[in-house]
Length: 76
Image (cartoon, rainbow, N blue to C red):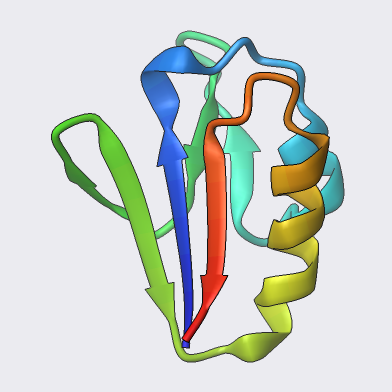
């Protein structure tokens, strides 16, 4: 199980997450901020829980590349 969390409000639209994990992230055409695909929003945090362990590495790379440190990736 992989859990990915995005604090979307703090996103600066650098696009690194989309480049490194295009299956999980895309940029919004409305505001230019990152969108965590298939996530649930709760109090400004967007969370994706996936049984697909293959998304861990690209999401972890996106977490490390994010200049504002708003992505969290955990493997349970």
